[in-house]
Amino acid sequence: MRGKYDDQGPEASSTGPARMVGPSVVELHADQTSVLEAAGHGASAAGNRGWAPLLEACLADFKEATEAGDNARIPALVKIVADLALIERGAIRPGSRRAQQALRVGRLSLARRLITRHLAKPSLSPGMVADMLGVSIRYLHVLFEATGASFSQTVTAERLSESRNLLRQKPPRPIADIALSCGFGSLATFYRIFSASEGLTPGEYRAAGH
Image (tube, rainbow, N blue to C red):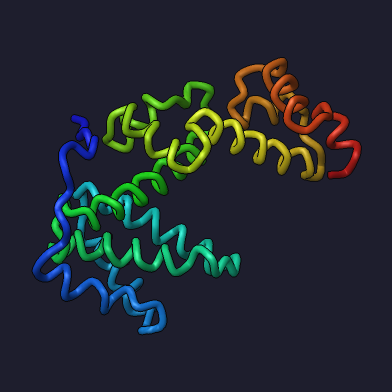
């Protein structure tokens, strides 16, 4: 069973409780810890409801941004996490414009994590991720187009990043193993894509000590 989130029709603005509750919980200097802890409890309580995985993915993004000291991303993530928690609690209507924006960000976040989780599979495709995310393939492509990188470009960039990390590891692993573990499918494909990106073969990259 797949839900198709295609943003059909105009999105209404938030009204009622959402308008009153929203601003107080997304104030960036007004106790972010309480907001995020409450959101975490909301994700657990939501069970199998469609937005629980989105909330968990954004909470993970927030944790990573905090650990990395990425202050530019933290305010926006706090707002999205808070809005997703309010959707779960019924304070923001899922069909409202504010909710749809939060859900789009949450779906993109989860889609990226699904890519990372299944990176080693050569079968990784838009259809596969769309099925796991519960959206249409068209909608998935729209999510990535908004980032300036297509789904395919995002997957390739992730595979290249992982392959660079593995090429730097000691003791060195066989390059064929690295190619397969990153989901390139064949050694020839790995060499072609890696050389086009880095200007060096995988072996030359490793020897150069990058």
